[in-house]
Length: 180
Image 1 (cartoon, one colour):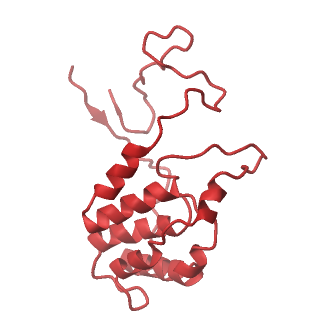
Image 2 (cartoon, rainbow, N blue to C red):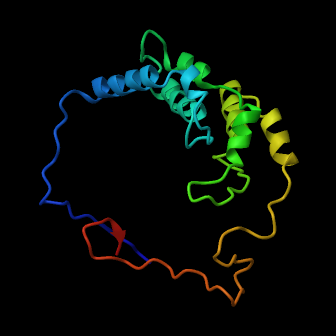
């Protein structure tokens, strides 16, 4: 089957122009980030892995240390900022993961990119190129619980009759890119 991609630009929307070059705007944003949320302050706030807290900022600087290593943000390179924000999880941050959510529901334990310990070990492993501790931690995790707190039924196999699999996506004729 031969698929073609059709693109129709949004002619009715004018393109935005930047007030300054992108590199200047990036530097301003990063300067604001490290000024308003320095590592010491970020460590005291909520910690949700790569979603929120010092490890999410460390992850940003990890990528910048590879894509823009020449940047200087307040006299430090992205690699130096990465090291400053790579703050190990504390027992208090682990307890925050188990608190109630905004609606008062019990927040279940997390695994993955919201888990502080896993994210810390993943970033540490990536930066040192030593995956031994990360892999041993992942292998030691207990299997996921058999029941989820989600109200939707869980599909255990493709032959499950209680919850049909989603329909395949259909080609659209809007102003977006879709296979025809």
